[in-house]
Length: 119
Image 1 (cartoon, rainbow, N blue to C red):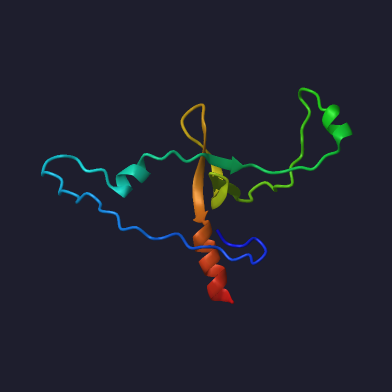
Image 2 (tube, one colour; image 1 turned 90 degrees about the horizontal axis):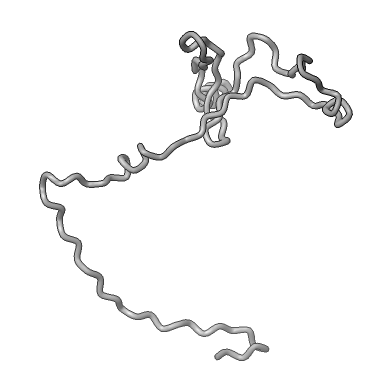
């Protein structure tokens, strides 16, 4: 062991390890690929309608039927998030008779690359 006053560390000795050789997968059997695994991962999509800052007093006074005004203006694109990361912008649409939907109007990377080329 190294002297604590000297503060030098001993290096552990490296050992050679023999690993089992991988065998090719027989034809006809399904192989799990990275893409197939990723395609099964669930992503939480969130659409932000708008935000508001109010005092605790105003929050405590909220009652059924009251309207809470948001900073988002009517007609402005809504922000779409995937697992909390900004993904795209969109607009509200009716998806069937009783569901809301969001039409994607721009991807964040498209907007980023357009502003990069404008500079």
